[in-house]
Image (cartoon, rainbow, N blue to C red; front, side, top):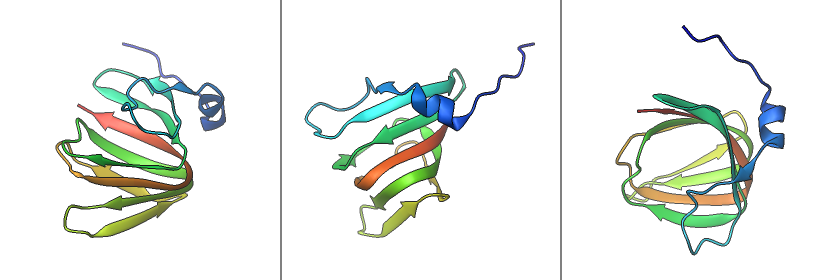
Length: 112
């Protein structure tokens, strides 16, 4: 049995490194710091202002916004604005648009 671990969000944010999963061609900067990995992945992620489309989201992810402004737009045009304290679930296979309107940070939980 593994031991529980603890850290602060501030410590994770201080440990951000460039996100290797950032698609080529985007102009913004992405950073990531993992807290856990495996069947449950968690950590913090940041992005500067940018826009991109997703056509087949690769994972089930729950996010909690801790800074900034993110607009998620569904294929039918329904938009959801997310700010500090808001939670959102992206189901595996989701399609839509991400618009980082103000540099953002999120806590994420990915369940495979």
